[in-house]
Structures are given as C-alpha cells and as structure tokens.
Length: 273
Image (cartoon, rainbow, N blue to C red):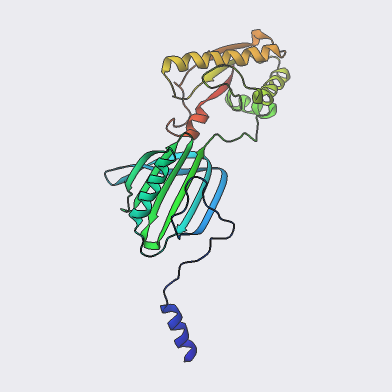
C-alpha cells in the first residue's frame, strides 16, 4: 500500500526542467541563448536538408527547402518568460549581427517564429510554449562535396540502355565556361569511355538552371558544351566524333525552386548519335 501511494505521489509531481545542457551540446556561434535557458537536445550535420519558414499564406506555412550544413539546437526556457520576449530578442540580435529578417510573426500553430538570412547563412527560431522550449535551426547553404564520380563502365552501360547519360561532376566557374580543375576525374572517365568505344559519336549537351535570363543561359550552356568538347579533343579524342549544343534552362530534370533541383539541372549530357 505504501509503495502504491509513493508511486502515485511521484506521478503527480510536475516534470522539472533540466538544469544542465545536454551532453555534447553547445550554443550556436550565430545566436547566443536566451538567459537562463538550457540546451535540451542538439544535432549537427555537415550536409543535410531543412525547411525554413519564410511566410504565411491563408494560414498555411510557406517553406523554403535549403541544403548545406544544418545545426539544430533546442532550448528549455525558464518560467516567467514569454515566447514573444524570446522571439523579439532573437530578432533584435540577428538584425544587430547584420542579418536580414525574412519572416517575423506567428506560424501555423500561432507560435512566434523568426527567420533571417545573411548571405549563405540562414537561421530560424521557433517557439513551442507548450513545452517551454524554442528551437534554433541554422543552415549554411552549400553544395554537397562530390564523393562519388562517374566511371566509364557505368556511363557506357547507361548509354547502351538509354542512348544518353547525364554527367555530373563537371564544374565551371560561376557564370562562365571555364572548367574547374576538380572536374578532371570525371573528364578522364569520359576519355576512357570514348577510347573504349571508338565507333561511338556523341552530341555533348550543355544545360543550366533557371538563374539568369534565358538568352544568357542559352549562350552559357552552348559555351560550356564547347569547353567540354575542347578538353576531350585536347586529351586525344578525335574532334570529328563530337558535336555540341546548348539548351539553356529549357530542359530541367528537377524543380528550379530548390537548391537541390538547380544542382541537378546544371549538367552536361552525352547523347550517342
């Protein structure tokens, strides 16, 4: 009976907030914690995706998907502090640090939220008053470092199957047709492919994302295709086996509204003729 009574009393006790930060967690370098708050949990990934609140439309959240280095920190804040107070403090601190506030208001659950941006760095602060918590999501937008490159055998198999293949890993200077040095491993695989199949002729196609004007993208894509052909010719491939064509942003394979989609649309394709 005494044991049962003790369990009932323990169950009736309120959950006390933790007094120490979760193990291995520390504050964001961008936004310091609100006073007397403690870190409940955290995560950090060198490359991941996150959706940040950028607006509200007819009670629905307008989200923007971002990719890059993602850090998420959830804090517990003390009694006597209002969610609005934390949101206003975060907004003021971000403005002072040179951030542009993209959104400041209430989310779909009528809780305060603030989203801000400074260059490639984005940050979202969301309040959860029911749990006395707020979450800071920081995204440093960047492209994924390519760890897997195309190989000649795989490219040949895809060409035999579909007659064409999209080649990723050929990088150019921004807005230019200059091939960057890190593209050489992929280009060397193209040389191996064409050497192994001397009877194959190719159309090298250039494709861009939708950034910039259509006319500029058309010109840029043609120039980039020509740069690839010139590189291959300089490395032993007969020029008569190659023709080039630029398609600009007219043939997207993914949504240009996201960073991931734009990265997929920026590509070179080989078409067997």
